[in-house]
Length: 81
Image 1 (cartoon, rainbow, N blue to C red):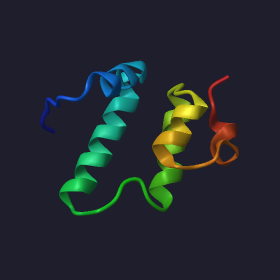
Image 2: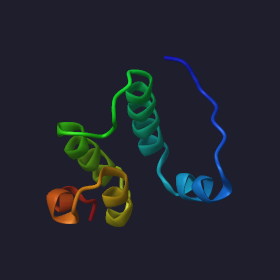
Image 3: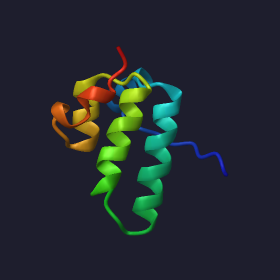
């Protein structure tokens, strides 16, 4: 596994920094791998798997919905209490 450094706009960086490190890693790996393969991310079952992973990592439901394009009711039962 390699380490990659990225630059982003301040507004995006502020949002990024609110995510747990584990969630950042999941997103970075999945999104970059898909982009380099010429694919969209997340799609299909990857959407649900990403939503569940983010929910288990404590990411807020509104952020999960934004990142996965899924309604909260799809992953609600996996949200950290």
